[in-house]
Image (tube, rainbow, N blue to C red; front, side, top):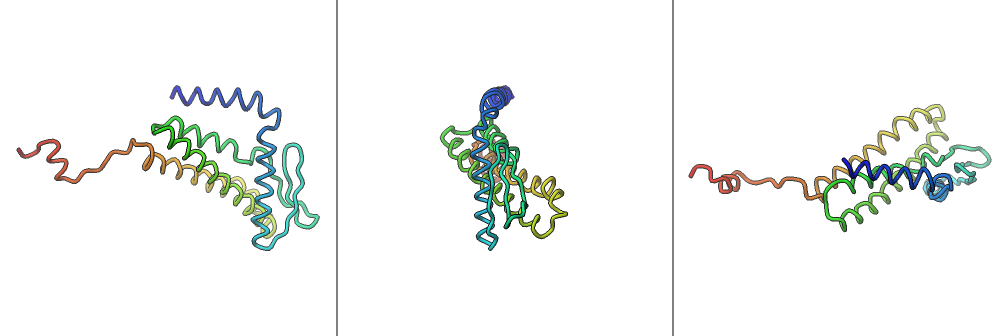
Length: 177
């Protein structure tokens, strides 16, 4: 619990007080997420363009603005949340570093698919955008992160108890002797 609190304080002072006012890494992450979302849309036949503003990026189809990707939607906070959990949980540091990097990449890809999905909804069902943005994709993304956490706990943290056969338990605890 103490390590979680210390991580939060470090995040707050480094990001909120120093990086966020400078737009680092928000600007780059928002831009790359938006452009990758447009690329995914191009794979399915939608040629989108984008325009970057200081605090968000916009996706356009022809001259119609479809979606704005704000810095708050670039998944940076999700990266920190995911990483903080893995850091605070038990496990070997070399595994933690690799798992965090792979997890951040996976979350970034899920967020790109989220941007593409929201763009498709805006094109075909614009009235459903707000609901899907607030609820559907929030549930999907957080469920994905929860799944990554559970994978860490069950497979890599080393805290999962080993299951023993009844014969092994009997032998270990000397039952029936």
